[in-house]
Length: 78
Image (spheres, rainbow, N blue to C red):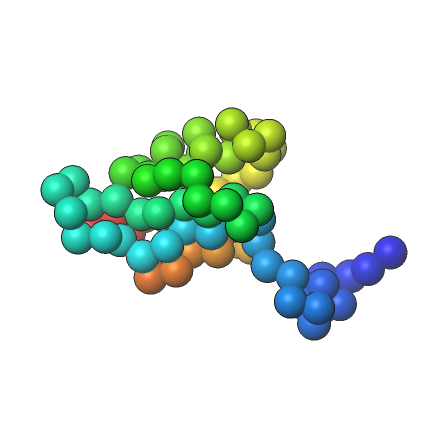
């Protein structure tokens, strides 16, 4: 068994990474799951849908540590 600190020491990172907002019309954020680019999210609902499709339906994208949010949190879309 391992604890969270051991996983962090080994380079463990969240399964879901949401990248910074891209200034486009409309703005979006790139989403990676398990190291693979899965698409563009235009809202938190899109992130949740990508997670569901990847079999992570129990994951709460707003919970601390569930998702790595780069360049702003789950409510930053502009």
